[in-house]
Amino acid sequence: MIVMTPRPLLDPMGHRRERRFYAPLPALTPRLLALPALLLGLFAVLALHQPSDQASAYSPGGGVVYSAQVVTPTNPAPASSLIVPARQQSASLIVQLPGAGRFAPPTTRLLPPASGDTLQGGPTITPAQINAILTAYGSPMEGEGQALYDLGVRYGIDPAYCLAFFVHESGAGTQGEAVLTHNLGNIRAIAGLPSLDGYRYFDTWLEGANAWYQLISGIYLKQWKLTTVDQIIPVYAPSGDSNDPTAYANGVKQLVAGWRAQSGLLGG
Image 1 (cartoon, rainbow, N blue to C red):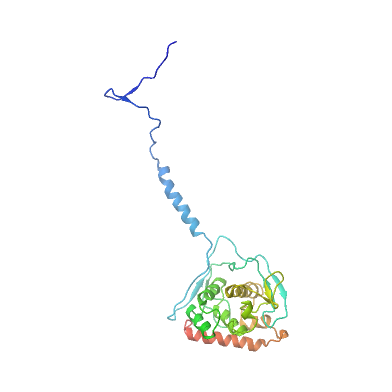
Image 2 (image 1 turned 30 degrees about the vertical axis):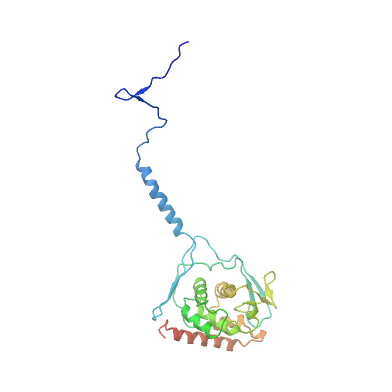
């Protein structure tokens, strides 16, 4: 039997070379060179399309305030709502919106500062001013001015009105049932949700504030098209529940007008 043995590899000088188990890399083509750039561009697109809140800005020097809601790839609007009548000194119509803490429906419209007695619009007071007011009332929400401001921007509601309702309902959280429930708007209980003494209960004041913004934005402004203080208060705090809607509305408007004059954001 004849045994064949492979011939050794020799270099040009006649020296033996070891076999190498690799092949030379092919030359880089323009397509391969373009791949990193393509991946980088895709990453940038995904980053830019992440859900975002509204953007806002204010000028302590008295410039015009604008808050802009930006488009997001998903629609975070509540899918449904449940209206429950209740006997309540205020906020007698109770709303349960699925997905607590979800954003208001986004829009591409720029929201100028709210004007007159309309709740919808950009902020007319600053976070620092909100903090000063909360401090003056000895509120348990002292220091949360930026959070209340940001919620107003998110829902497209002037936070001055949220603050005015808070002051009217419970002296900014210092009086009545709200001291125990953290219920900024004194919203009545809903079956299946935490409650105390017939009122919605929230673990934190910010949760209660978010619920108020959801109620006003989702139901009063968007569903019922009630946009001004005089339109909202008779429904929010009807006379049939031992309220004085006229006095309530006048009180809210006076508070907001005074704060706006102090802020100077509307040129007042």
